[in-house]
Image (cartoon, rainbow, N blue to C red; front, side):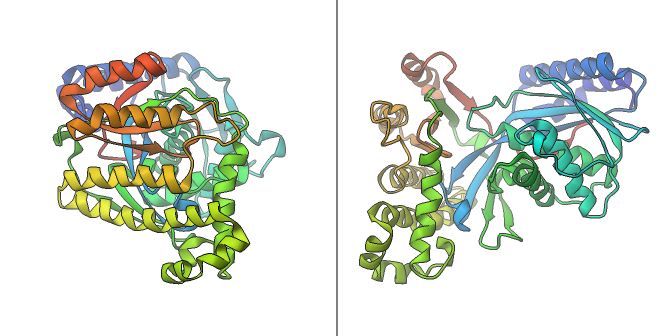
Amino acid sequence: MLPLEAKEKIQSKDFLVKLEQLYVCGEQGAAKQAERITGAIGQFENIYGGNRDIAVFSAPGRTEIGGNHTDHQGGRVLAAGVDLDAIAVTARSANGKIRVKSHGFTEDALFSDDLQKKPEEEGKSISLLRGLCKGFSDRGYKIGGFDAYTTSDVLTGSGLSSSAAFEVLIGTALNSLFCRDELPPLAVAQLGQYAENEYFGKPSGLMDQASSAIGGFALIDFSDAENPRAEKIPFNFAGCGYCLCMIDTKGNHSDLTPDYAAIPAEMKKAASCFGKKILSQVDEAEFYSRIPAVRTAAGDRAVLRAIHFFSENARVLEEAAALRANDFESFKQLVIASGRSSFEYLQNTYSSSHPQEQGVPLALALCEHYLAPHGGAWRVHGGGFAGTVQAYVPKDIFPEFASRMESVFGKGSCRPLSIRPVGGIRIL
């Protein structure tokens, strides 16, 4: 489809309805998204030329609903795609060259037959492109040249995984442009994880990419690391009467690497007391029967973090069951229980090396104060320590709630989200 034709189609009534469904928004929101996509097409034309057969792709950011720090232990996670996304305008080229220009960044360029890892690219976006192409190539697909312009409203550091959205975006484009859409969403997610682990140099789990690729509410089981299982959980969040919002506590993430690293390290140390590598391989009853020995070998904090893992891993199934049964009241209570377990046992709401900086506990305390009387729910979100808090807020009190939270954490710190029904997708 040529850019002019694409711009005309974007303004059609049918396409605007499609955007309303994709972004879980009304007519005004769909019109804004149409304008955004049209603008991205214009940028592609300016950079790569207008007489091209283009395709447009989208991949959402994600939010962790349940399963705080369970994935790296082979546990379960409940996650969801959100209405913030990355989009790409793409066109194939015949010269074998891959060029990707992302808004606000310099262009990345490589050749489709040069896919070996390059140490000097580690930590840079070009490594993700090269790693993704290598992953598809290793699965027997011939990746050719293409040009792409991307833009994203999944802000870096938002706790919604902008990097996973980019990986799934490019992976979805490659799957469509060169692989006839043969790979299922979870396979695209695995190739994103491969690129991030092996080429970018970040040892992340699969949760972020999987939830972006699948969309909606997704229950993901990592007990088999090579073959994780994913199941979409049907639930109409838009009709439950609540806003899902992220509260950015604006904490300083520097010098927190030891805090993050200690969680999987201590959990694995507890598992090693049973001759296992990760906690999902340990029998829970045996763990509780041998706590004195685990205390001696691994320390009390490792014991508490293991306790969190076992309870949180089971709670994910309960949360999924509550959503399936359309029992939002029970779901909210499970969310609160998840947050309390993270606070008390996992201990990832602030760094013990920076005791004066406790933005996450403060946000949790304020959420409880403002939301408990109105039936809301709250929990720490993601890695923790200096990040974000997730809250379920009745829609009728959201403006007041947001104002109160932003008076403490700054303008724009309280962001409402919608649960997007689909993951990585070709939209045009």
